[in-house]
Length: 537
Image 1 (cartoon, rainbow, N blue to C red):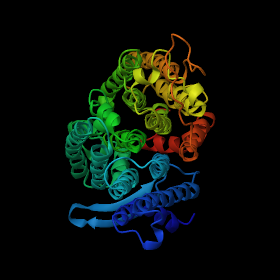
Image 2 (cartoon, one colour):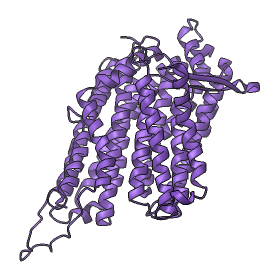
Image 3 (spheres, rainbow, N blue to C red):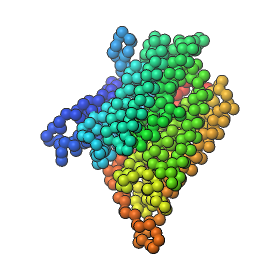
């Protein structure tokens, strides 16, 4: 594909949602109002996100797959000369899958919201915030300037805050405040680290800083920074990114946010926003502060495996009978465990582990996005996500009451527990392979211990997911009430056409990535090798 066309496509990914967000607040033209202004603005959201998805697919189709480590579709123009801050955009094998995933999940969310209008204020504000969120997320994965990355990173916070606070349920105000306070505090700390790297390296350009780090042969290490400076900068950046990841023990905002958020908010929070933290670790910390990354890697791995075990045990506690566990909260805690595998893979500092982390990122976005869609549909039908209320004494019997919905929920559960042949398997396996043989200088006995604990986490994940399937999908569903039994449960609507349209791409991609992992690993591996300056493999 022509370089200019690539540039325009990448710029369109960032700018179109921003323009669409502003346009959503304007009155709809008379000929496009349909049944009313609310329907018109929701259709506007579907149209804009659909165009962005088409641009992302076109960019992926025109991407030079023979050279995925090379930055492509670059735009580099001056913005603030006094600070040497530039509007620098580009895409490589690390960022391309995340761009496509973001565009896909946002389009599916807009499509779902069109048919399932979220209860709350005017849809105009909802669509405007959704598009603003998409623009900031896409920009986070496309920009190659540290200050622009920070601005894009911050840009997503306010839209998500309002989506939770105004369109959420339950203790939505408390959850929204916890979300914004945790993430803003982490961002302030991260900004200090980014400034230290940029000012110390003489530029905020991420490509130049990574190149300086890999070319440096002096004792100073990455970007010409001393080891002490690297340690301080990397610690600040890691803390800020770890809040968003989320890494234990900085995760406590996540369950409340997911439980209170509307379905679309939960899908985007789990499927896209969490990936910004782990992407920053791979794009910024590993190549720009390699000495500090090596120093902090064992601690990052330790926190990661604690998160894996902690998240799984929390899910087991929520899944047991009588715990009044919320199904959305359970999936939120499962994200803490799954993102622990991503952090473990990054902490191995090996191409195998980092590739596994990037694969697990995409798999988690597909699978957990699907699960939150399904739980949202279940709540719309039954009015609750409380497991005890759903299951009663014998189980919710989704297989009998809504077999397609039950089958999809079971599919999402077995994909989440890492069944071979589905996307969830490869990322976790590669992360553990990386821990089996970590980078030179890292303690192999310690990492073998981490690998064993992560393996235990996979067993615990299988345990709670199978409990959820048993309680929600199985159970008695008598055709006629019998003496001494519960009254017959009311029928549930099965999967609607628009729901099938919104969910089937996630199912198909989960199967495709599980059966053909080379499609994704072929993109990420050369780029990871370059980010790690050749790695140890």
